[in-house]
Amino acid sequence: MKPRRLSRRQRALANCAPVSEDRIRDRSMRAAVFRARGSNEFANQQSFDRAVAALVRAIPIPPEAAEWFSSTDLIAPSKWAWKKTARNPAVLAIGIALVVIAGVFVFNFVGRLNDFPGSGTARKLLGTAGSTRSVLLDPVTGDAGTLSDLFFLKHGLEHYDVPAEFADFRTIGCRVFDDDEARRVAQIWVVEKRMQFFLFSAERNAKTGVVLQFSGWRYVHQEGWVGAVTERNGVCFMAALRGREKDLAPYIPKVKQ
Amino acid sequence: MLGDSGKAQAVFQTTLHEAARRAAHEGLPNERFWLFRDARWRCLEASETDLQAEPLEMEEHEVIAEAASQIERLEPIQLAIWISAAPEPQRTALAFFYLDEFDYSEIADLAELKLSELSRLLAAGRRQFQAWLDATFPERSTV
Image (cartoon, rainbow over all chains, first blue to last red; front, side, top):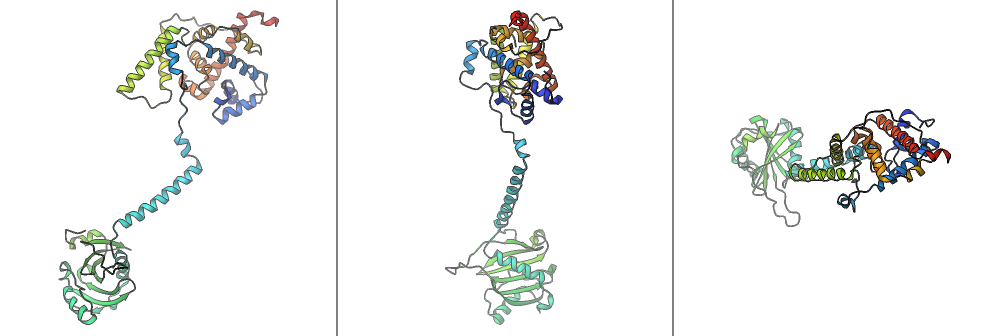
């Protein structure tokens, strides 16, 4: 058959045109059949193929074999081509969007995993630590543990005690300031690794006023600073330094969290 | 493929038996047409022992409009024998094509042919079959 106006590939495709048009599954074959349809040669070919296929269906199949195909299709329908689907720009765009949304959710979820009562305030105070200059603090030289009395006597802050683990650190200065969330905050600057300590009221239940307690030490991170927070007698203590968790870990008792 | 229902039955049973054995022991291949590919090779093996037709230049006629009426006068087994006598891979191409269950790319895959080869074999098969029809029903020229 030599249909006119057909390229070599279209001629090849037309020669392979399926007997049943519903078997045409790709656009190139559909186009070739469409262009060849006008020619007598192609009409004869189709008529020839239909007659042969009808005769093939009449070829007797042994009953033992025929019963295998009595109720099912000979060929299973083709599976969904995942690779082809994935290359579709719309699917690709949706996929990327879903991955980004999932990433944001995972990021937030992982971030919240380490949350504890007062973690928000602790992060805010880490920001304060980053912006604090030594001139803002009242110069005090002594052990950090001795400042509890100063806070109580001068500012009326009860239980603003530096934990024993940090009580022996030499101080550079301290101050007490007000914060919207943490109310009265005591800030201490020590010599050791230019660490800063913060003492602030623990978070309370909004309805009952009961202190929301948590056990051990919890880490928070903010803008290159890391803090280790613990709660005792309704007051949170945070040791903070610029660096990573591993820089602070040696100062924290092993049984944290 | 074989032109002999007894041999076809034997190949069919062997293929299914082997498929059942593989399913039980190794798991089935993750390929859509593996059973047909397997059956095809068994057919080729089964026909290796048959008398082989001598290679000869087969006469070819262009397909005509009356071909359908000529074909209707054939017995199905005549067609089966004609296809089974075709040389490989033309036999495979014709058998799968007229089974009318596969598209051209699937047939090319099963018969391990390129599109151009499949096209040439099918076109030649039609013309050769038309020549055989003309020889079988010579009164066509008077129609």
